[in-house]
Image (cartoon, rainbow, N blue to C red; front, side):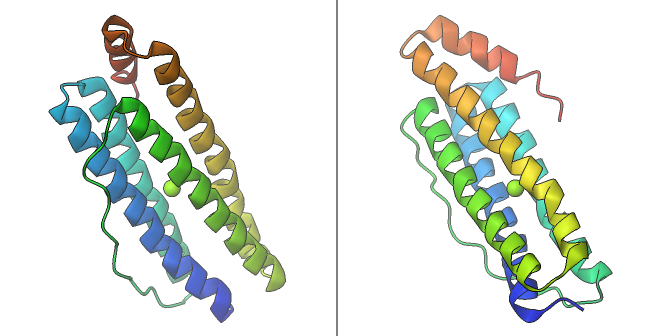
Length: 163
Ligand code: MG
């Protein structure tokens, strides 16, 4: 049994991860429209990864014989100013997700729910990686500025993303 405040937060997190997926899909559309296929590819991968995050919570809730309640997914921005703007928003978004994961972890600790704490360790590590990736690309975009050659080089590098 998962205590209610923790279970509610986990069900909300399914929605937050799906919202993240939807945000990155919107960013993929932006990059496609900008003819930056490498960036678009990176965002499509991110879209897939966020759906996997949602499914980890989904499956965990069911594994604990609790009820999954799917909540409405909010709208996401559909217009972006520049690649740098997109990655600034990505970093800000991932920082918010980190705070959400940390808050769920606090609920698991308060509930003395060791299984949930262990389950959440993966997400805590994942958020370190998510923030680091967004920070790295944002930093590169700041350095690139208006240099189109360098932008296309980064686009090519991002097209190689496997996972
Ligand atoms: Mg996520």
